[in-house]
Length: 505
Image (cartoon, rainbow, N blue to C red; front, side, top):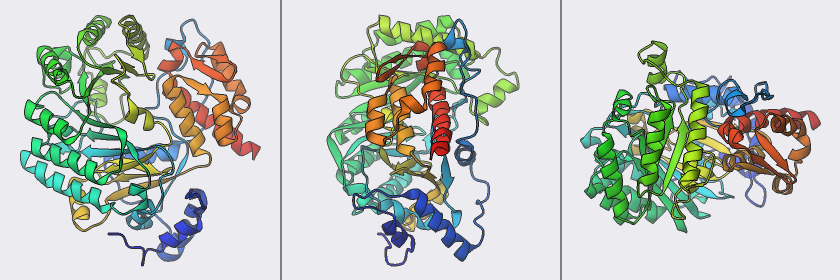
């Protein structure tokens, strides 16, 4: 399935891999760029891709830009610390792999050993309707595409069999996202999950999540997923308010959602979690409190409280700019909704597992979502799926027909790749810890040899003064305001440390 006899990059990979299997990507990419200049001239970026691909390029190119890290000193830091949440995810700087080498670069991935905790992501590119706030939409679901897509996906997964990347270490979590995985036919859901269990070396305590909507997720599909080995369902409720839901493209009514969640939970064979979004057009503190009250009374196991981030180019952003909604909560209103949400969950005796996720009991672990913020290796399958191995991140083409054509031809359908900068594991560890609400200075120094307490002292001191965190010896503990701003703080701290460590070297 692989082509080691004619891919010149494999020899380069070997030259920059140590005895433990760790790859020096910065040295490798320098050599690859030299090869690019010899064989392909100046490496130009490919023609304009999809909106999501262009956003990914922009994010990679903008990392490390000078951004003011100081928080405002005010009476209410959850509302006043920063002007607006600018980042959906935090990351360090990265270099784009020269496009002429991307078609060959799959062999770099499959021949690179996974060296840390691991996950797998599967992207299903269909939705029954497009939500106005979503940037992940690829295409409308058609029943005849279910088998066609599933056949291709299974073939792609099997393309990795026998590789170092797939078989060296256990995979701890698999996440089927999208898109709307539950749109697929029951038999195809079962085939995908069964294939994953056959091909992917799942750990004995694996978490296998199927994401979706309750609309069209009938008992036949639920039972097919459970039979095949799924043990977690993540449903995008967003809000129970029927009018607000339907105004942003959701279908089910409040009563339908409640009945559906009660039915799914009654199987008692999986963790059932839902997403709620605060900041949707038309939401008020009263509608938000009602959503939280409904959650506290349902027999589900977990809930995410996500702030609405208006991504550039999303349908909702355009509609709000055009004045199509009467009111969309601003940053200060969203901050208050976060405070209300955390207080409501605490009052209902739910445990805060991360800055946005709450668990009712020990059945919910939220494993994949935490791994996604860490340095974990992540395999990725399906159009638009993104992953990384030892920090070398990649994204499959989001163009559905292009994906099918490449897989049919036995080619890994990668459209872009990014090489991590120096100390990328440090910044990923910081992101993971901040996601969990703290920073452990001793752990970071022991693992990375960097004294983050010393190098970031002025940042932590200023943020403590602003009310975002508390310095407690070897630990930083985020306040409620700090948890609200955690992603912003993670990106600003990463930017700061990147500059500081470069200046120190």
